[in-house]
Image 1: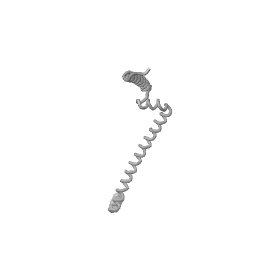
Image 2 (image 1 turned 120 degrees about the horizontal axis):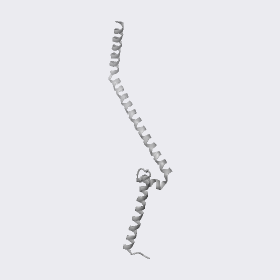
Image 3 (image 1 turned 30 degrees about the vertical axis):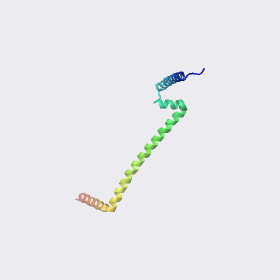
Image 4 (image 1 turned 180 degrees about the vertical axis):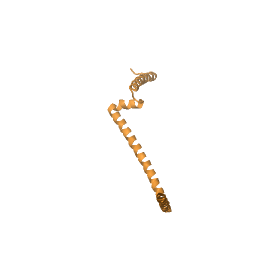
Length: 115
């Protein structure tokens, strides 16, 4: 039996509504069982729980490594900045002034001990 165009559209709409209702019910059930969001529920449905859990673990490890690299980069930048300041001080000749100040402090400390 061939359906007329309008009847075919109605039939299609009914199937679509039925499918979406089943999907929403299944999704709600999964979300109640502790899935974090609909995307996770869909991935579990598509790939299976074990593969999805391995995927989540890999993403977590990648985030940790990226955060660790960022911290290392920041620490290196701080050290590099300190080195640059030392180099600039050396070029300006400030290290001689610091040495003279340190020697004066040492001499004044030595004088106060002997007095």
